[in-house]
Image 1 (cartoon, helix red, strand yellow):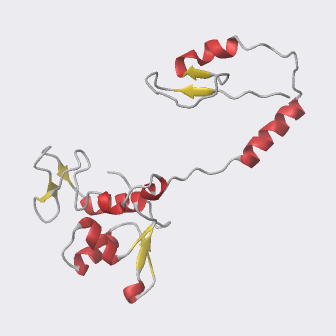
Image 2 (cartoon, rainbow, N blue to C red; image 1 turned 45 degrees about the horizontal axis):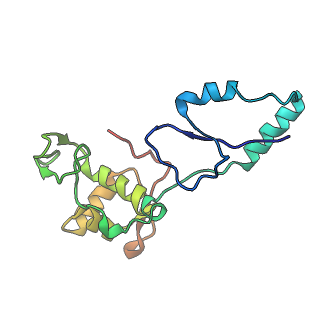
Image 3 (spheres, helix red, strand yellow; image 1 turned 180 degrees about the horizontal axis):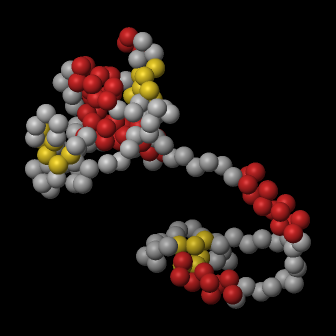
Amino acid sequence: MKTQGILVLANPNTVVKDVPPDFPIVYKKQITYYLQNLRSTGVVLSATQIYDITQQIQNDQKKFSPFPLCSYYNIDVNDLRTGLLCRYCNKHLRRNNRETWYCEYCSKDALDPFNDGIKDWLKLVKNSITNEECRGFLELKNPNAARYALSKSSLVKKGKSTATFYISGNRRAITDK
């Protein structure tokens, strides 16, 4: 059975370079029209053939995991903005009181900027974090502040003493608030 590839674009402003001249490019809104105009080969697949194709597709699937994003997109970790950042405008937060932080730029309160920063680290840099990495990334002044932020998070503690690190685990997921 002959198959044919097709590139479907969601945005009509997208430019695709170096496409072979006979390779079809269709925009999302044109898919129905494109499929209706395909020539029928007259071949009808049996239920067994469809099942076999389905099984082959399922067996060939690979889980897509672009994390950590810095590695995937070749971003230098030193280029990342660090500190406790506002989740709305990405500006640095100011402490409002013992429990809350405040963004002077967009006037939003942040209830748990430590958890947000730790989630950012796990998505951007690597799937584990140490006390030292936490201090550096969140711009915390001492190890106790980092220990507090890490213990308050949903991460699972591994190792002992200076070899301690934290990973995402089953205890509870890091939640978006």
